[in-house]
Image (cartoon, rainbow, N blue to C red; front, top):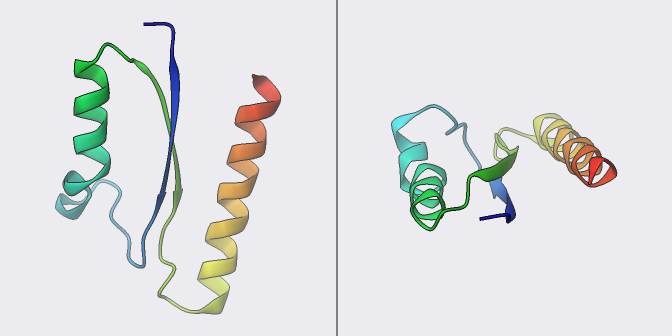
Length: 73
């Protein structure tokens, strides 16, 4: 308890909320919660294989989310 975890997840496709997301993010959430860690944030950069513009947008959004997480800390 009392621990915070930030999972940074990248993917060439879109996996959040999809069955393919079960393989990594959902598994990590399950294990971390089993260990008693409930303060978990996920930062995603998805769609990286969809071209330059989606890649830049995904990384920019992830960087903003990371900055917000650590400013609040």
